[in-house]
Image (tube, rainbow, N blue to C red; front, top):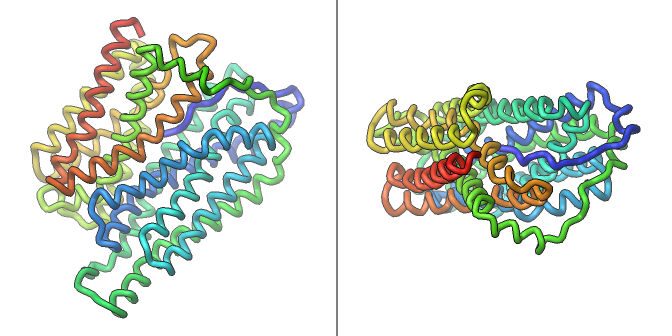
Length: 425
């Protein structure tokens, strides 16, 4: 998922500096933050196994990651105003790289909170990159083709979310030894933990090297967009009165719930698919299957875009959310491959939800759409709340029964789509 582009304007001087290499670099940024975000889905079962965590505790990985969006989005926008687009992107890449390297001391410390701290720092960098990349891609060409470039950027983002879990499954989950750490004690346990956590440190160190090399390549474009005119400053308290609009208020809640539900399902997939009454496969195999979940979202964007030419976005939203509820119900009440593939197929219908909920929420705001966009970005923090709640239910009952939490989220999204359809989008 990606934050929407702000409505920004650049100078003629900036447009003359536009070139294909910079476009490719920005598209690569979309790929990069998509990859790192979806990598959490294979990191969660690894940490759960290493630290013998409950489902709720393991979901704190997503909490640490997505709270960074809530805390860093506004400072990131201030960074752009102060230093410009590319310099801010370089700063975001540096923070990401440092966050990846923070996994090295976390490995030596050997405590779960140390890994959460590294993830939070990494996510701060990802947040800066997202805040930069969306408006920056709109500046790299004519205003008429801006939406095409943004869609292509999101396509690269989806490609990253599809590929990263597959690679992560091989290098992170494939390294799970199969040793039951709960049976070890003292020096034997410490040695086993050090060996297992080192795999995570090595994987993220390799990512850090790629990020720093990319950062060096971005440096040649450091002056681009530095003098771009930004959105006029608005008073936050005045913007909050947008919540007096029923449509906007419901849209904010729906976006919060959607991000939370999407992240939750991706987070539990490995543990779900390895379960004996589902697909009973290895963690590495399950990690590779996550690519179908995120890949389905990529394919669904093209299908959804075509359908929206003949069906209104609000109707598409409640049809797709109804399909997700049906798929979750099928998965909860079946076994074997049917249960597994039903849940994986949810990704296909997730595809259009984020941009559709976003656009429907802002469609009646007119000149205040930019203010609404800023507030809606805060709803992404839902990815930090819903997963632990689902994990808690899994700990109390079963992982299958815990799916009722994301199902309830999609039910409210269905009601929002119905509400907007009755209002005429």
